[in-house]
Image (cartoon, rainbow, N blue to C red):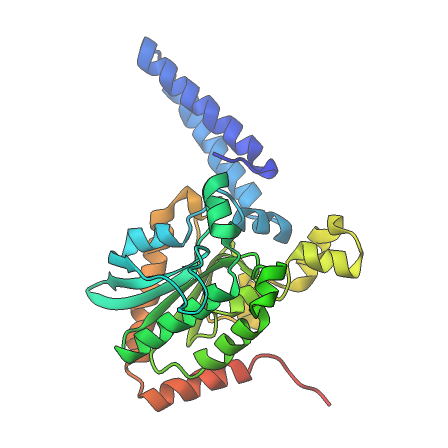
Length: 316
């Protein structure tokens, strides 16, 4: 398991507890009081550390390599997932996944970015950075869901759309812009959840939804902290300062009406207790799907339009 710098004192105590347990099993030693003392110290330390994380530390949690990715949530909460491939124009994009699945007895379309667990898979998934064919594939699947009146569940987890020359040559900006326009008109409920990184247009390209939620330690931003620091200070070392200024965590995003709610995570992040996160996500999906399906198609589209029109203030 990867250990973040600020988490090291916690893992040191956990290792000590495990050593004492192993020793107790071998020697039947009376060390239960010591284990209880360490457990109490561990819980107190967790509260102290995770209760006052800086924005930059929370971003590190959002990027944790053990954090659950899209397919982990799909496998945990859904059944009968059938992945669909290709944009019918250029190629299939392994950074953007889509397909039908069953969720609590109802058919849904799931779409989202997928990162890799090791070097080979990260190369295959392009570290979750989709090409234009990925965004065109996503829109093709949304139109398919619309045709069959199937709700769409979106999982956002990307540092941003891929900025390479090939992607630009194939129309990266246009693919994202068309998704922003066309998602506004999709005649079926859309719920988007930012599960890790929500970076720039790469996230927004599949994030135009009737409801947008974010996990507690995920972030959603117009630019990465490193990118912002490089532009403003010409120095990526200033990323922690940029992270504070960008207001990219859930609490600020709710205040600015960019998102509709925050799904709680356990202390230490979603990878510490994925089942707890799945429980909160499942409840969110069920409540909001029921509310959205009760609307007429015209009301659904009107409310989606107004939702995005109210973001930001214009002062003359």
